[in-house]
Length: 375
Ligand SMILES: Cc1cc2nc3c(=O)[nH]c(=O)nc-3n(C[C@H](O)[C@H](O)[C@H](O)COP(=O)(O)O)c2cc1C
Image 1: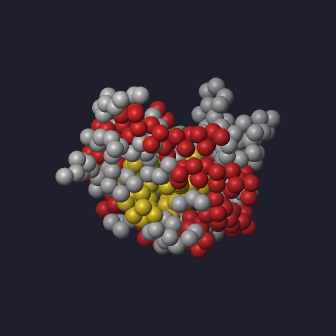
Image 2: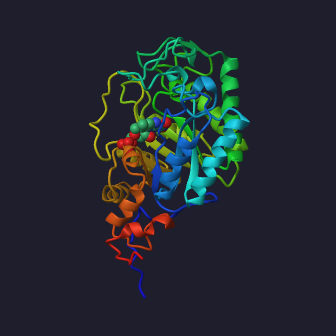
Image 3: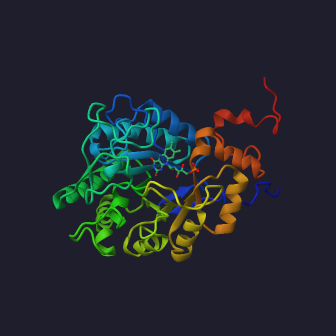
């Protein structure tokens, strides 16, 4: 009997190092600001939120920005990975995500000058927490903030930079012990690594600043340190802002160039923005950032490249993969609306039970497409 499973790029499995992903839909990393105890310890919210999206068919479920050090949290309610207890809490989430057939990814992050902000106050636009609200002193490459509504940040000393590289590597070791399959380094959106990359905020005069070589040194040291401890069979991924859309700042040419100096990186997710107060990029809409990811795939055909931005349906996603030649798509807000986005996408593309990537427990949900007796 011939197969009725449609031929798609979206639901073609992919293998990177020792990991096989069941399709090309990734849950984008999304801060949840859900830890009311402000201790960085993942709790039932992460288990439920990420677990639901693993059951909903995503092939790679990536955590929210997970801080490598307490002072690197974007908000006080963020998840962290700076102790064995943090590792244990995330291990529980990883186990469940993997039990649903998804790979578990952790996005390691340090917000630098963008740390210690308040997401919940009325009028929030990433402004800093005051000391009375539990804010803390933030750090940046040169004491220059990427956006203007932040409290003053302190320029990092060389010792602080080297300690910080150590924090990333230690967090990577914990991520491995917690069982994560993929480690994503957050180098995008104006956070600490990005603050080092762009000359707008990195005006250091030592060898961690200045020219391209200096500005990329912090990232290169993080990647080298992590690749040393991150197992050979596990993929290493980076998320870049492919462009800041700011004249004279980090560009797609820079993103492409730095990838020539990051041996051991297997996967790249290409987003954009995060430096400057005024958005000057292309009008957001379906696929508006994908030309950046496409450029990276063209320049680096051996890298596994994913794109992100305003993809809201399976048909759009399939078309985007076919048109651009990139390898996968990260889904953000559409996956907040619908944890079963991949299931819906499969249905749109003509899959039927039993080929839908459904959790077995939900098999009757395909009614009335696949009528079944209900007794
Ligand atoms: C609530 C929320 C939280 C986010 N937090 C993160 C984050 O922790 N790390 C990150 O790299 N991007 C973060 N992003 C950006 C998303 O990963 C994604 O790039 C963005 O939402 C665009 O994709 P979309 O149009 O599919 O939503 C966040 C976005 C949202 C909506």
